Image 1: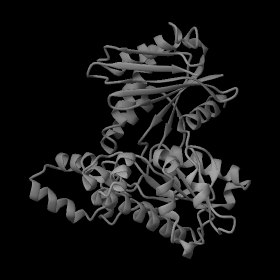
Image 2: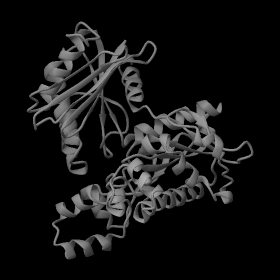
Image 3: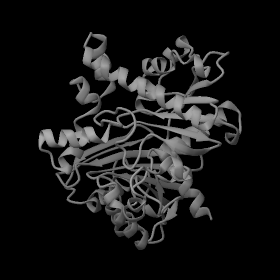
Image 4: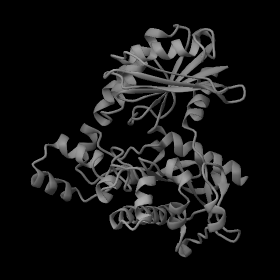
Length: 399
């Protein structure tokens, strides 16, 4: 059974085709620069590839090209889209409307689009991709939507509510939603399996660290709190995002710079974080290299990130009244041993003891990196959101 997984952005459409018989990836690629000019890059599991500049005025043309490269030419992996059993889509914001994987209908697409105010960069693009798929795919191919926010719908009210007047929640739906839920759900389950334990018996802090980062408290397999909030801007320092700041600092800087709300949002989302503090860039590798050469601002950016992660681990251990394991995932979490070591050092109060030798040798693979006598286990767990989306989609259509 073949499942196509689609992850649409405002100007991109990433995809993977998986064979669910063995959960292998047959092909993957990205249609980018949609609405600008257009480019597709496509690779197959057996090493074939295809790349070309294309005309992508909308997501529909991008999806048509996706179908073309999957089914024709030297890098084709199937003869027809009729071979695909279903399509699974990643959707960033489901708000309180969607708490589980859902089959796509015109009404569902409209509702996802209506939520675009809560995720303006993502949800409208998702809706465009969904409509494009319906135009291009055979009507017999079902589609499913998997929501980033769904995993966090188990948070208690005390964790997701803000201190605004309650009417703002009722009328404008202002609350913590949390993101990276698909990743946190996948890695926490994978960790429980690796530890040989039932996830219902585990208290886990999941650290998804990348250009966007979030920390989640997973108690018994359920999200009970997370660092990202109403939008993905909240939480720890990120590549170009501020993370959590005093709201009065926001209004103060708006006045000083003469920013409109949209300009201030752009300032906090695209010009801050690692980029803003270090002055070097948004990529952890570039900032790390600069720090190693003695750049103090680059070192400060790394110190801020590590310090904030430490605090969140401690806070979530308190919230869950215990901690069995800390896991690291995402581009930084999986591939930056120095970040993991710094986060887990001087954490004796929680019983965390990292094995510096084992940790130094781990990049991008599942491994335990804590000492044998560490009360809290520390693991690196590679994430695979596309696989989880495919599994969810298969489970839904199998019903």
